[in-house]
Image 1 (cartoon, rainbow, N blue to C red):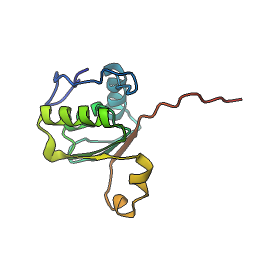
Image 2 (image 1 turned 135 degrees about the horizontal axis):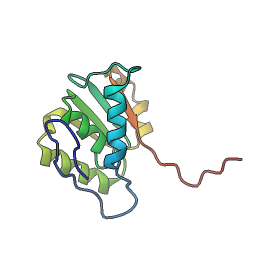
Image 3 (image 1 turned 90 degrees about the vertical axis):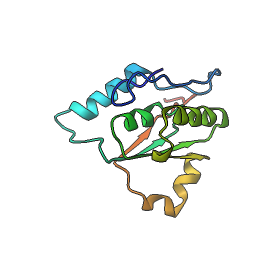
Length: 135
């Protein structure tokens, strides 16, 4: 797992040993960023943007945004083990001053009225649903 572009390109990220956190793979991230950066239908510049990374896991999406000159990234993670890895990744990349991490349930954080006084340019939600039966 690595940062794929920008000023932190090539930096390796720590990933959890257990299978309960599913890191966003390099190829998936590259596809998302190509769409955001090169689409004729989307006009977006990462410079000076504020990003909200819900269910952030190891932080690969938000950290990739910082590598591409995002101003600030807010991470929300509820699982303690992944939260600790996220903190290590942030420290390793020396981007502590450009991040805020919340260790809590996403809905708990989003229900706080003060939270949405913040403005976000991208809200990224990478959530895996398990055991869903659709008829």
